[in-house]
Length: 412
Image (tube, rainbow, N blue to C red):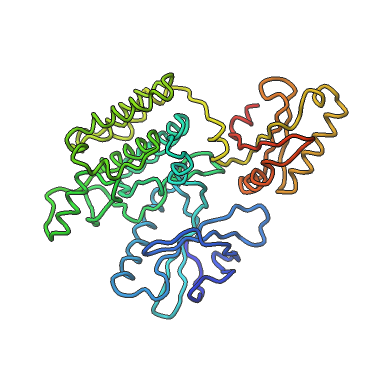
């Protein structure tokens, strides 16, 4: 999809026009060497979800940097346009160009706005590691995405915690940033992957390229499995493993180091059958890429047959359109029909301050007896409500607000 051109200054204006609509630029979400990302919202369409505007080639960029930005834009656009429609890959809404001057075009991608990244989740875990439910959820979603893009002939080539984000609307993890991706058998970028998540064969290729030498072989989709193996090991251990992976001990016997990490964590919760995850990670971290498990086969691991349940911390960190309010109603309210209806109406009135409430449920029987479930029209309103309702006093009690899976809520 192409949009109309427009003119910006050094910073984007508060409003811009693209695709025949007016968009409000709300905030900068981040920036890199060749692109900046902004949160935007379509004006005049109440309830429409916000988007993410990725702007390549900031003003003043010239020479090699400008060429790199243009090349990165074309690569990411081509990959996303071919890979559209998969649940675990970020959605591309459209593409347009803006002009800072006649000879300085700036390319833009309009993408769906996603939420918390795995990198942020690792920070929240405070070196304790993520729950097995979250690791399983992330592993399955990323493997589904990799199986699809590998089947389409693509290699992501920059899988890392910052490039895996939670979708509050779809309740799943999605891959972003395809600026280094390439078609397998046609590797046009020699410097791939991020330090700490770089497969051994990519590390060798990078070193040879720096020395001005050509590698005999190209990297394959196996580099993505290596990166995912390191990510899952970090999620389990709660530790950044960049220096560990670069150590001589790792190169001598990585399997023993993985065993040690799992043995030390097993003491914390020996009831968790973690050996399936350990074996899955090991199958992704063979030095020989030909021995690494393909994504499609990894999805058949016994690890995915274990029915883990989310921790309350998971339900606080991963937004959904549904809120669960705890410590609001006690048995006195539940057993008196008149008081029950009055308090439900009061809660609904309070919750509507943060956005339209689609439905509200207060079960009188277990499971969920006395809990309040509030479904908002979108996860943005749910997030605002969760932030402002948590810690509020209701009838002398502190309210606890967590998110709740929309799919589970719909099942009743």
